[in-house]
Length: 188
Image (cartoon, rainbow, N blue to C red):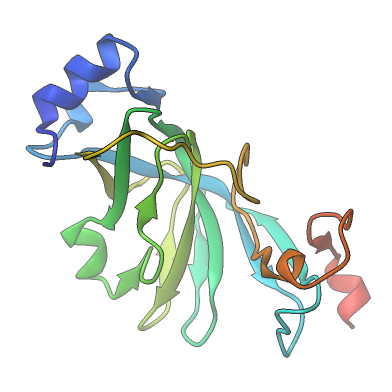
């Protein structure tokens, strides 16, 4: 059962779900509208191998925006920290975002109970599009769970922003670190 906007506000006021920062005007009939954070990541490797830690490039999205190009995957995050120990959540694009040919979460929209984080966005575009930090880009819906709650405690627990794939930790030796940040000079 999906929570209505009013119920999202009520549950937030009781501390049963988290939206930080919270603006009441972003409540929608069945969701909460969230904004784009101020950094974007891309993979530096030409070929991605799920058994190897990927190298990533991270850039700040300036107030003038960032031009997203077709044929690439970009990882960004929500400006908000959102989630709940009591509800599962799903992340969706706004219609206005989709009508620009921007996909923000096309393959992994489910957020487990216990994931209270800035959400990583998987951004792909149909044509070049300039996006801006703080722009309203998507919505989060909360869902009542049936059965005993089991909270998420996986490899993305505690993330503070966009996260590159950590699939390599499933097949690599334990104790390796998060993806390497590289500068553009290294790639030349």
